[in-house]
Length: 174
Image 1 (tube, rainbow, N blue to C red):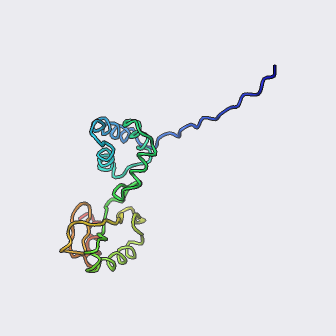
Image 2 (cartoon, rainbow, N blue to C red):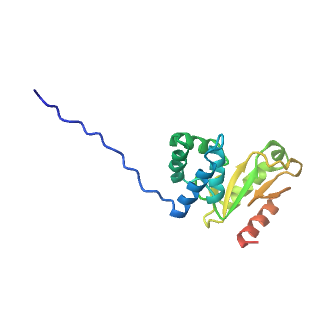
Image 3 (cartoon, one colour):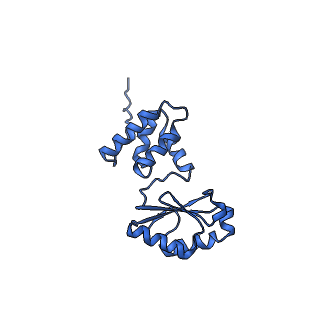
C-alpha cells in the first residue's frame, strides 16, 4: 500500500483592516440598524458614505457579512453607482452638472476650466486636499445652468469667474 503525499492547500490570510476602531464601530452600527430593511444594501452604503465621507474597501467585508451576501455583490453595487466614493474626498466636494441642459449653456467650458484650474480630473482631489471634483448627471437646476454643488450647496449660473470665487471661498473656509 502506497501513500501519496498530502496536497497542502494554502489558506489566504486576510490582511488587517485599515479602518479605525471608531469607523468599524460606525459601519457595524449602521449595518445593525438597517440590515432588516428590504433592499438594505443601498441605504447602508448611503449611510456609510454619509458617516465616513466614502465607502472604504475595508467596510465592504463588514457590510457583506452583516447582510449575508458576498463581498463581490457589495463591491459591484459600490462601483456601479457613480455616487459612491471609494476614496476619502477632499475637505470640500465640488460636483459639476454634466446633463444636457447645463452643457447647452456652457457646462463643457466650465468643466474644462475646472479641471485646468484645479489641476485634476473628475474623481480627483487637489494636491492640498482641499477640493474633490466629481461629475453629476443632473442637479435639477436646469433653468440656472451651468449648475454645481459645493458641499451640498446648490449653485446656479456658474461661470468660470464664479467657479474661481467659489473655490477660493471654500479654501478659505468661508
